[in-house]
Amino acid sequence: MASTGFGTPLDTVAIVSLMLTSILYGFSVLMFMGTTWTFTYIQRIQDVNRPIAAVAILMFLLSTVHIVVVVIRTEDGLVKYRDTFPGGPVAFFADVSQETFVVKCAIYVLQTLLGDGVMIYRCYVVWKSVRVINLPCVMWCGVATFGVCWTYNYSQAGSNFGSIFTGETGHWVTAFLVFTLTANLLTTGLLAYRIWTIERSVAAIRSTKGKMPIIWVLVDAALLYSMALCSSLICFARSNNGLFVIGDMIVIIISIAFYMVFIRLAISKSTQDHLSTLRGGPSEVERRISVQFPTQPLQTGYLDNVFFLLATDR
Image (cartoon, rainbow, N blue to C red; front, side, top):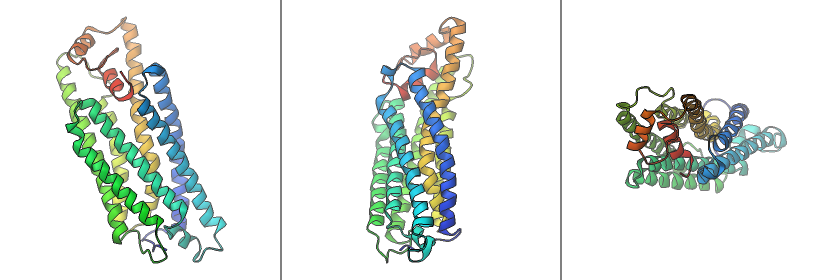
């Protein structure tokens, strides 16, 4: 059995985690529906980037399985094994060798790899260079290695496992969190810089700015995820049981951050489509931008170009 950290008792932590994770899951379901709308309404089905659509579906499935496992684990600890497990509910939730805990860890690792992989893919699409993503790819491999190692350690844990906050497993978890946070910040910085340079280049021929700059859409999503990771690192460094709450929430936050990018860009694209229709077609400025930045069809403007880069096969 693993020794517990400081702070709120683990049985209380389990209840709080279930409540907050369920709320976030509700939001993620709505946002998944919104993302599906962007793939079907904003562009034709045959133009949808199938790998990205598959990632969206897989993230939703992992989030769903995760919330189910959280419910089962909470029910097991507080109801099913309340009077039979040695040490009671607190000891049950401290036991990292429980199958439900190991499954949660595996889902967390898979969801993290998907989220980081999407960010690396976006970098490649926007930069059109493999060299740019070399370091992020190395860090992604590190995240995968560390995640597999600490999940495996949990699955092989015995009665003398010790605390998850110390020892070999503690080092794996620390490395995992640091690598995924660094990879997220690095890929976001690369994306933001590339989009900013293009935005600055076209600013001279474009008279107005978009209502929702793409750079802020990406940065907002990255900040949401980064804040959750920083909270995890702080809790882990202080051996605080709040880590378990944040860990459950991060699985859902990753999918929410992924969905919000497409939804916000889709809203802006829909607005631009309407304005373009009122004008009777693309403006002279948009035609000039499309000539200077012909990597993908703009259709209704620069924002559309980046949206198609991230969401379609064109």
